[in-house]
Length: 214
Image (cartoon, rainbow, N blue to C red):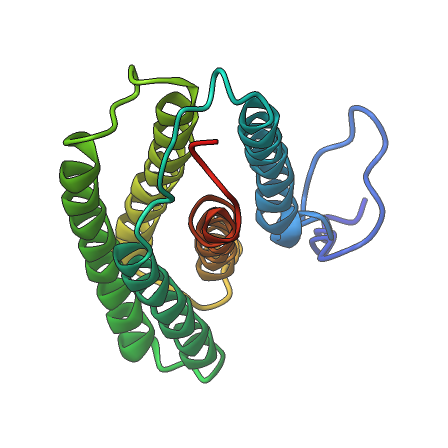
C-alpha cells in the first residue's frame, strides 16, 4: 500500500459534503470584498430612506419651520477633509501593491487622524447649530440631526476599522484571514466619504435654492 500523501488542493470547486477541506477555495480570498459590498448596499439603503424622509417631511410647511438654510462653510471643510482622506487611502492601496507596507501603514494612520479632525469640526458645527436648532425643535431638526449623527457613527466605525488595519502585521497576500484587509477597509471608508457628498448636496446646498418661512 502506498503511503504517498496527496498534494493540497489550492483551488477548484467546493468539495463534496463530508470531504475534508485540504486547501483554499476560490471564494476564500474574496469573501471580505463580497462582505463589505453587501454591508455597503445595506447601509446605502438606510441612508436612502433617511434622505427620502427628509424630503417627505419638507413638503409639509406646518411641520417644517426652518426659516434659513444651514450654513455651508463647515460642511465644505468637512467634505474637503473626507475627500482628501479617501485620496490618502487610494495612495496607500498603491503602496500595498508595490509592497511598500511602511508607507501603506502611514497612510492608514494619516486617515485616522483626518477622520478625528472631521469629527472635531462636526462637533463645532453642532455647537453652532444647537443655539437655534435641536432635535426637539421640529421635524427639520429631528431629521437633520438623525442623518448627520448616523453618518458620524459610520465615521467612528470607519476609524475603528482603520485602527485595526493599522495594527495588522501584514498587508501582503496571506492564506489566513483577514484576506485583503486593506482593500476591504478602504472600500468602507470611500463609502462613508461618498455619503457625506450626498449629505452636503441634499442638506446644505440644495436648501439654498429653496424658499423658507412662507
